[in-house]
Structures are given as C-alpha cells and as structure tokens.
Amino acid sequence: MAKNRHEELGLTNEDVLHIFETMLMARRIDERMWLLNRAGKIPFVISCQGQEAAQVGAAYALDNGKDWIAPYYRDMGVVLHFGMTAKDLMLSAFAKAEDPNSGGRQMPGHFGQRKNRIITGSSPVTTQLPHAVGVALAAKMNKEDFITFVTLGEGSSNQGDFHEGMNFAGVHKLPTVIMVENNKYAISVPIEKQLACVNVSDRAIGYGMPGVTVDGTDPLEVYKVVKEAADRARRGEGPSLVETICYRLTAHSSDDDQRQYRDSEELEKEKKSDPIPKFAIYLKEVGILTEEIEKEMEERIMKEVNEATDYAENAAYAEPESALLHVYAEKGGNE
Ligand SMILES: Cc1ncc(C[n+]2csc(CCOP(=O)(O)OP(=O)(O)O)c2C)c(N)n1
Ligand SMILES: [Mg+2]
Image 1 (cartoon, rainbow, N blue to C red):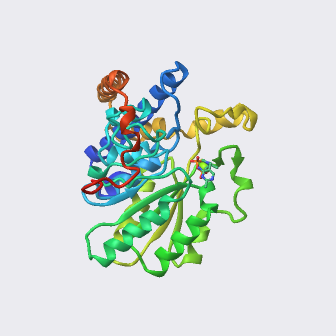
Image 2: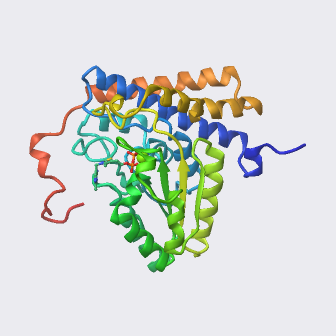
C-alpha cells in the first residue's frame, strides 16, 4: 500500500496527532488571550495565529531533549513543544511572579526558560539571531551534542543582526537552523514593500548556506525541511536558512488597528489557508482524526486552558522589592 505523506517522512500516526494537538493548544491559548485582553484582564497579546504549522512542524524536527532554541515573540507553538505549559504562558500574560519567562517583568512573548533550553530574548527584533549563533559556536568549540534553532519574522530579516549573524554562522559553519516565519506583514508594511528580492531565502547564498522556501501552513512540509537542516547541522556541515510562507491572521498585536492598512477581503481570502483546519482535513482524509478523537482533544485542551487562566488570574504579582532582581550582580553570584 502506498505510504501517506507523514509516513514517508518517518512520522507515525501518534506523531501527527501530537503535532496537531500542539497546534490546536497554541491556537486556543491565543484565542483565550484575546478575550482576556478585550475584557481588560491582560495588557497585551501578540499572536501565533496562522503560524502554528510552521512553528510546531519545525519544533518537531528538533530534539526537544537537548537542542537550544531562541524563539521570537509569536512562537507559542515552538515553546509548547519544548515544554512550556499553558499555565506558564498564562502566568506570563497576566504578568505574575511565577511567570517562568521573566517573573512578570517582560511583555508576553519574550520567552526564556532555562530548564527547557529556551534562550531569553529581548525586544529589539533579531537580537536573538546572534545569540543563537553564539550558542552554536559554544556547541562547536566545546564539542557538545546539540544544535540551535532561531526564528524571526521576514521584516526582521532586514535588520543588521540578521546579516551579521548569518555571516558569522556561515563563515564558521555553525550548527544552527535559522527560520524566517514570513507572515507577509511587518506591522503595517506588506511584503512587497519589505524586500527587493523574491524570497527571504534568496539571501542565504550570500552567506554560504542553503536557503529554502516552503509552505508554512503545512506542518509536514516544514518538518521535512527543518529535519534536513537539523541533520546537516548535526553532521557538522553548517547552518541553513528556512523560510516558511504563512499569513498573520490577527492584527500585529492587541494594540494595533489593522483596518488602517489591510482590507477584510484579503483577510477572508487568506483564512482559507488557515493551517489548523487544513491539517485537520489531511488527518481526517488519512483516517487518523475522527470526530470522537477531535472532540476529546478539544475538551482536554479547553480544560487545560481554563485551569491555566484561573490559576494565573489568581496568582500573586511580584513583590515590588524584587524589581531589581537579575538587574545587578548579587553577593554570592547571580544564580
Ligand atoms: C530593532 C527594532 N525595530 C523595531 C521594532 C518594533 N517592531 C516590533 S515587531 C516589528 C515588526 C516585525 O515584523 P516581522 O519581522 O515581519 O515579524 P512579525 O511581527 O510579522 O511576525 C517591529 C517593527 C523592534 N521591536 N525592534
Ligand atoms: Mg512579518
């Protein structure tokens, strides 16, 4: 019998259900955050909606038991696969003391969690790229068995940090995978006004690494290319650039009014390639996702999202006296 697409990639039925569940979890957490924001309960949302396939497909191609990741602010799908929980994410959204990312100090989306090897990120876009390249350099110098993975938006590939980091990674053949989530907008600026070349991946050749553009609404396509790039990095053959084409299904953030720059017809048209229903159709066609499994999955996810929301809403804020923690070195080290 002919193999299904996921079987050809070496993925089992359990693997693809797992991928789907993580995508759905990211979407449901994100949707809840918008409701909480509009109800005045949380200050800010920056969405993963439309990018879940790229994020989870890529994360699944890495080793979440040993690789180090430097995600950007939309990467809820990536951090969930690396072990961050709905509760952790909600604690961050409510800016509570127990938020593992920053103890409620940073805006949501500034991921960082040592135990899951998620490298702390900063607000200026693309600063995470030289960080990930530096960690990859450490892996190479210390002959350690891991690679790094870094993501950014396509608009951010115009920043100097992108070019400096790419160049350094290329020259030193560092074990890193650089993924650009091209969602066709940088806040209000559409893709046509961002790049003079056709694809972001066209830039790879200038830094001596392979560059590939894939459909970022299909987790299997993304898994395939990120797996190839990760294997290449593990073999010591150097970095790769992966560009995933998707679409930002929400406003840039909860503080943005997208009606100023994009019309609703465009949005409606792009919703047809929403990665969540699209992957559900595939899983149903191959007989893996039944109505019953889907219902159970939705219930499991909503229970977790509800519990995470309640927990985070009732959790304590950080003590004002702790504001300077991790800012200055402390006596006996800054552990
Ligand atoms: C160096 C720097 N310049 C500007 C900003 C403000 N800013 C935040 S997100 C963003 C747009 C980034 O667009 P893109 O890279 O395409 O990512 P997307 O938000 O579309 O995922 C900008 C300009 C910033 N954070 N850092
Ligand atoms: Mg963008």
